[in-house]
Length: 299
Image (cartoon, rainbow, N blue to C red; front, side):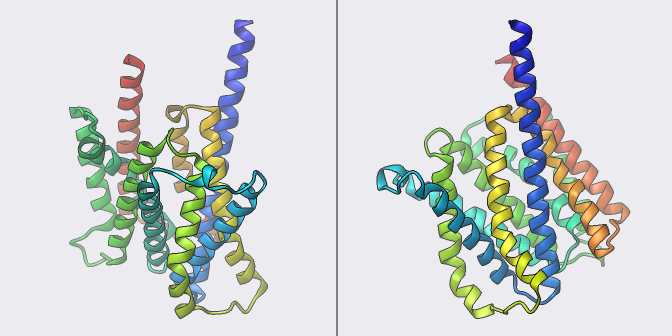
């Protein structure tokens, strides 16, 4: 019986890992599509609006099956839920603008400093204790970001600061997600995020709107919301099959996916500084993960 239980747990963990890999493949499809569309002349505001409009409509259809009532989606933490959603929307807009100027490899490498920023923010915002090893990893991760963006080099591009802003937005988003976990249902947070993004970005989308001329552009634009929503669904469900400590290393598949699509679709080859900086950021993130995992086992 014990052997059967262990096998079931292993199968569930493998399913969770597969869902995690699928989620980040969908997120990579979003970023690759956005890169294609911004280079085709579509504005980041329009694309971000389409991303959240699709997300919102799909969320409405999904929750409508169970009956939409205030009791289901009302909350005593509306302010925090909306603040969480605002950080997610800000992250999306900053990332979409940056993709007009930077390669997919660079934006993804900088974005993965978010867990490192989260670790630093967990001290003042969540009251967590961070030991010397994790502080070392935090400073090492920031050094990796500096290697990627090279702020004092002639190759520096201002859009890299947008990607840094994206990473900080994602870190604050993660802090609020941790705080609201267990208090607010995931579907409620999905709905609020989609609604806020749709409402806030609508006037900006109207001002910058450009109607697609080809079926491919329409397909990619309409796919943004579907892929974004599906990615978040898989990500949420993956944590129901495997613990976060098991799933975390597989988030770096996102960087692998985007490195591949950056080369195949756009012919971009990452330079040596991007590769070195990305390696440092990944190592720092994994070091933080390993220390948190070890501390969790001790507890």
